[in-house]
Amino acid sequence: MSTLRELFTKEVSSNLDTYKKWINLPDPEAQLEIEQFSKPGWFSSDIGDLCVMVCSRIVQAPIVVITSYIHAPYLPFLPEKLSSSQPLFIAFDHTAPGHYDSTQELLLPSMKSPTGLKCSCGKARKGDKEYSTKSCTETEPGQSKCSCFKLGQPCGRLCRCKDCCNPLNESERKFRPARKNRKACMCGNGRKESDGEFVSCKDKDSRKSKCPCLRDNVGCTSDCRCRHCGNIYNSPDDLPGKRQPEDEPAAFKGKAKRRRSNPQSYKRIKGAVFASNQDGELSSGIWTELETIMLVVIQEILFLTDLPSEPANITSLYQFIAASEFVTEIKLPIVKKEAVEVQAKLEEMVAKQQLMLAGLNPQTLTVSEVEMATV
Image (cartoon, rainbow, N blue to C red; front, side, top):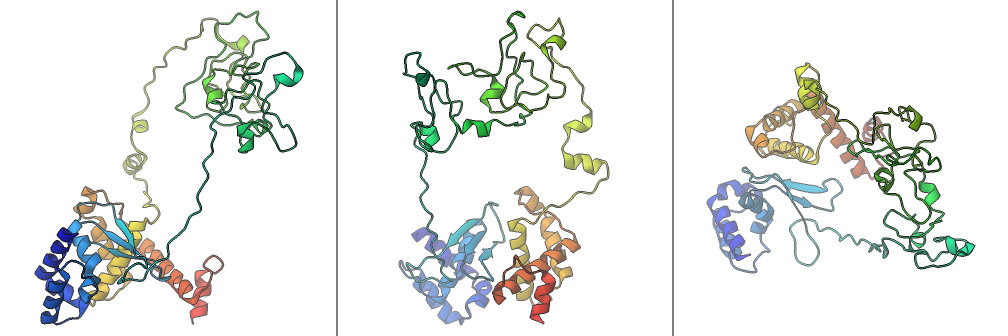
């Protein structure tokens, strides 16, 4: 802290002309407060109001102050030079005198983490009695000794339960599309054709299947080479292109041939590059938080320089910042916007500010209703 305080006083002393308009103090009094601020423990002074702004320039990183103001929930500070695009978020509490509006601490209820990740119901049971062949069942309506059932979740692939009959498993047995990057399964290949009772991709008795699709809780697709598939996550209808055992070629012996293909060149480039090559229109996307903060800072700059805060001036300055090489170099999430987009964003910000000041609900009123209410 002593090093930061020393750098702070050095920065303010060397650039006092820049910070004078923020403190409104004559030069002798400002120099006196700077000297007092260099002492450890001294903070309550007009120079302390420059703490966040000066620290932002010292660390060369944007700092966002979170406040409890309705019309200004955050105060951004952007230095002239940036060494990092990651902003620092700070907020003040009530433990010491602050120079900005204090915020209330948010107390979150503690979340109870599940104690059991898997169950092993029925694993140690012996005998052929009917009641001993089922596990994870309800002993009474809504009650069970199964740890998974107590947590309100079905038994998963990590469970080692024997002859699982968890009633919550039935709700999970529905069609789930498989991921494209998942390898296809080949369950059942190599078994004799005479074994007609065999069903692959399905848990049998007390043993769980090794099918990768069933392990990932997804259904088998047309790329799978499984025989007599019994995956519980399959679609109720027959999967298109799913090969049946009788339709499978005789030359296929459990190992698929490598598919060699030469995809077109446009499949190997990014969508933005392809659209640019085809003279297509590229959308600038939604407004990011940093872009919204940039509009607020631009309006503040125009106000301090006595320039009119017109949409044309705001758009011109925003486009200049977004097209700068420095923004591209450190990869800030700031892209160019059209004048129509900037105008619409400014109108939205003004409408929200009017709603907050009037104490209205922004979810039930439109911008036109706000304008009628403010006339």
